Length: 436
Image (cartoon, rainbow, N blue to C red; front, side, top):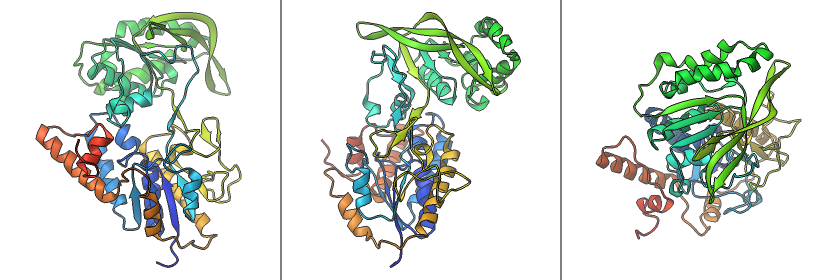
């Protein structure tokens, strides 16, 4: 089509795929560039292991989007200052606009002493590991018998389940900066974990924090409900393990012996309330918890090496957008470059949120395109330049082959799902590199 616009979408997680679908459905030629071999991002590599139905439902939607004839997929292509292409090089290919939906690939570091010890990890690395995303799938982790997870959201619950059910941890403690009323997991997630909660200990913990709650006139029942609402539909207990909460505690450092973690140091907090917002404030009183593993589940930040300016762990957005959607800015400071999904707001919401945000980002791009004349970029010249990098580039047809091989392998092994754990195995399965 002579006057068709061309847009590059970077990142094929839910925001990128649904954003690309929105553009393709509006007669835009879309080039979808993805770091991983497989599409899906956190929907493929971030959802808990046993949620097969949910994952399959999403994969089905992704397949339908990728099947659109004016959408080209290129996997195993890294866009970053140190990647196969820089953002500027992608722009130089001649697209009419670029939509960045590369997620939040950076990890938030608290800069605490002992972060480099063996046994100290970030939640995302662990989740990628158990969901078999290379290279995290091949990394060695030290998951001991006593583990602490910093955080009180759904990711904490997923990791606690993984440690108890798959790593046979004996004790898992959620270290929570604020009080029981500020936990933010859902009862739908907590039902998988609640039966491991030591109830006597939980009541003792509630007694311990009561004076702090009373000081800001907070009803302890709010927190108790948030935790116990999950009991009605609780999963049965299958392992011999205990789960605990340690409220009003902020990590201040990790202590090791011979490079291995042995203790977590925390500072006790009090709560302060201002404008209806509850915050934690340190008391200076510190104590230690004996642990083999500490996992930080405290959110993510964008990749500072991506090529866009960063502020407060997010890419900078144009504060006075020319093409807002629902009053939200999807515009980066660079003309024609837009951000969506977690690239716009890190760690915000789940798949449904990412879908909406990616779709809205695409709507912002469509508004922008109305102000331009198409650059008349040929898909063949784009394909040629992308495939010129010195490693295999994955297309939609390759993905279908890989899917078929993995499905066959799952059937053979009598599993719900099978995934190759390394890029080389995937490339061999697709026939893109020789079998060793």
